[in-house]
Length: 335
Image (cartoon, rainbow, N blue to C red; front, side, top):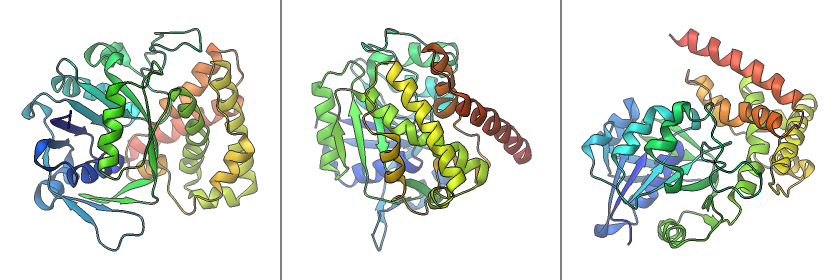
C-alpha cells in the first residue's frame, strides 16, 4: 500500500461513498480520515458513515476519523476531494495543510475543472487560468495543478440523511493525469479503488471524458433545477428533451473546437439518458436543500470557453442567465 495516510476532503455523496468503501478494504496498513461538516459530520462521528449501495438490503457502516478542521490531521499521501467546483477555492487553505512533497490530490469534479489547461496539448491554451474557477489563483498556488489526478464520476449518489449516502447505480470513476500519461501514481490509485471494489477506468485523454460527461451535466442540471424535474420526467417531456439536445450540441461543439474528441453523438447521449430513471440531479438536490448551485463549472464555462473558441452558445447563455437568477433567489430565501 503506497498510500499510508488517505483523506477524503468533502465526504458528502460521492466522497462519502468512496470513504465507506475504502474504509472496509484498507486494513491496518493505512489510515483513512474524512473532512465533513454540520449534521453530516456529527452523525459520522456518532454512528459511523453508512453507505446503502444500489440493490443492497442493509447499509455498509464504516467507522472513520472525521473532523471539520483539517489542521487536526497529519500530512497525507493521497487526498481525494468530494467538493463541488464552486466550493474548492474556500477549501484551498485546508487542503493545502494536508500536503507534503509527493502528495497527490484526486479531484472528483463535474464540469470544467480549474486545472483544465495544465499540460494540455490539444487546445493551444496550455496553462491558461480562469478566475471564474479559481479566484485569485488560490488553488493553482496552494495545491498546484501538478499534484492533480483528474476524475470523472459516473456514479449517482445522494446524502439521504445525515451520515448516510445512497447510491442509485453501480457506477465507475474515470481517472487521468492532465498530461495524458499513465503514471505509477495513477496505477496505484487504480489498485486502491479496485481493492475497495470501486469501479474504475484509466484514461490517457481525460479531457475527452470531461466533455462527454459535461454534455449531460450542462443540460440536465440547470433544466432540472429550473423545472424541479427528475431525469425521467425531463426525458418524457418533448419540449424539455429538445432543449437538452440543443445544449448538448453546443457543449460538443465547444469541446471539439478545443481539441477534445467527445465521441458520443447527441442522439446517443439522449438515448443513454432515457435509461437513467427517476433520479434527481446534483443541482436539483442542492436547490431543494437550499444550497448554492454549481453553476460556473457546468454552465458558465461552456459560455466562457465558447467565446474563447469562437463557438456560439445561445441556449447555454439563456440557461446560465436563468439558473443564476434562480440561485440568487434560492439563497436569499434561505437566509
